[in-house]
Length: 429
Image (cartoon, rainbow, N blue to C red):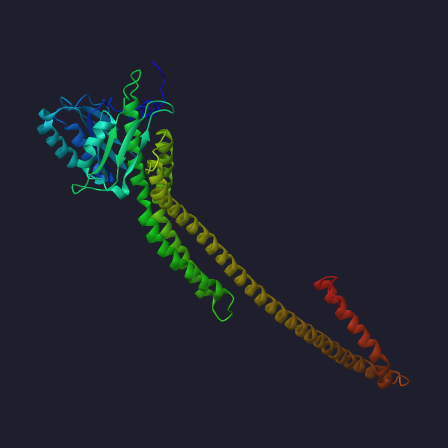
């Protein structure tokens, strides 16, 4: 037995998810695309397991793709995507399957989730049959899109018609003429082409979910940008306090974070879906018909501006985030400059205080020298007066006067030596 990685089989099965049965004209293909909340997923799986007449179900507790047959001439596929699910009915039988088709449509319509796209593809054998059916479908002439699409360049191509409008029942309608396209070597060129056509429409609708978010977010970004301009002007006004500025910048940052939380996922999804739409357009190998609007023309005129709007919204949000960071940096510089100025004033004040203390200290030292000398001379005078009694030739007052300078100098030297000994040799005294 192989020591398999726990994700190996999931990775391998991912390469085989989008399987369609071989489609042959005439046929009708009905497809629903639904957006589901996480809470709807279990209900959806239960509905898939409860199929009364489905084909084989993959042996997986949480399948992502199912296919089967609901009745002769009525097949279905179901596939789960990241945020949506597609359910497709393939109708190849005649009037005999109408009751089964009615039940299948009711079942498919009752599945959980909100429908983001519902479409019918009416597939006929050739252009003559399509042109005969065209008046019955009621396409708007002003919005009619028609062109040739194919599986590979140079191969036989099918032709499609649609106005991409919703009918009263909520479905969009596409008319397709196979024009001789058939399964080639079992590969199903017609099936692949119609599947790509449907995926193009599905991913187009999913991508366009970002447009309302971008439009709503654009108004929020307008408001944030106006607030940011006021804040930047306030940074240059000294009468506005730093606390008020910090509160404004914090509020702006929170608004941007809230806006990003509300729109980032949808903008990222729109960009991813738009890339898939471009890939499907290229894979369809569209050939325009002179004088007619092709699928590529329609997509470029209607879809690409919406995608660019979403991209512009995202870029603007990023630019506002950078400008808010710059405003915060300016506020930080302002606060740091103010603190440095305050520190400079404090240091100047401390220097003045230290100078005053030095002068007071020098004054006290001078007074101390005088006081100590006075008391020392007093003691010496007493001693000389005593000696004067024993030796009359000693004049105590004259000797005291002569000794006064020596005592002052000695006291001054003694105090300064003690000061250097206590405070160190670099006291400068």
